[in-house]
Length: 295
Ligand code: GDP
Image 1 (tube, rainbow, N blue to C red):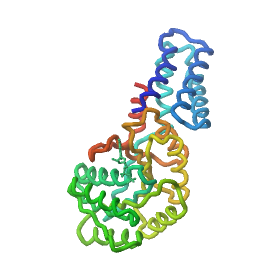
Image 2: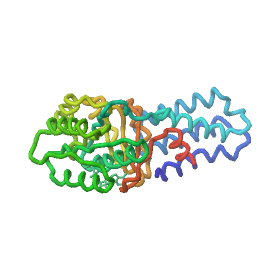
Image 3: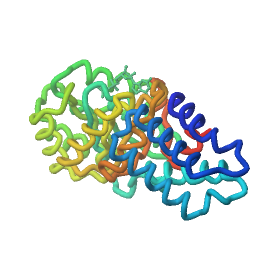
Image 4: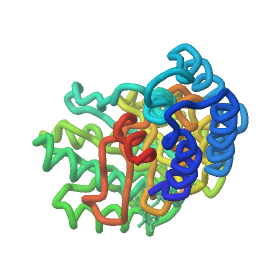
């Protein structure tokens, strides 16, 4: 995960690590390298620039030039700023409803169905919840089948209605089914498209309005870098979602989406997907991720 970025940041900071005393030129060069590493990671130019400016400000404020271990201090400053950029403190999901309704949104192929299963599995095994999965993709019968396969795999009931082509009605019926059957979490998997389009946005907005979920989560493939960030913005403008799910981090060597998404939509990354298996889900902790990136 993020191997390229880690390597480049390590290289950028390496220059300072060996020095007992450093100069302004050393710091300026390091900052330039850090910015380059972020741009290579597909972080938006403005965010990369703001980031290095903040690091510079802090470095000067903390007298990095005269400190005993300037390299160490710079690593700490960069780590703290990365943590802030990715979201500061970790955020949970709201499970206070009975049932708690969680709406999944995102493009087709982003990993929504897989993540719906992972989340149901996580809530069942780690939080002692009784989830219900609801299949609201009325366009692709294969998507309904896929959710049933996932549900069977993890031992979670799946609600679907192949005769109904109104996703709002299915979502509502799913919530009613959960209430009638003692399920305390409802996870609604919705249809995605290959790209943002108006019909999809209207549909998900209508479901959102009709069921007023406790949590609306936006699922996105982290490997798509700045595209992921742009898609997040488009969905957030319509849904004002509560959190981001970054999938496929296992294949992402760059990390641009993880680093930029929070500052663009001002919503926390809540979970990450790190593989195809149902167990490949982790709560997202910005500070742990920063530790990991900086080694
Ligand atoms: P949906 O169209 O948004 O419902 O996406 P799917 O859940 O069908 O996922 C699309 C593809 O991505 C499938 O082949 C999944 O197995 C794969 N996938 C989903 N999440 C992850 C992940 O975290 N890591 C990896 N490597 N693959 C994933």
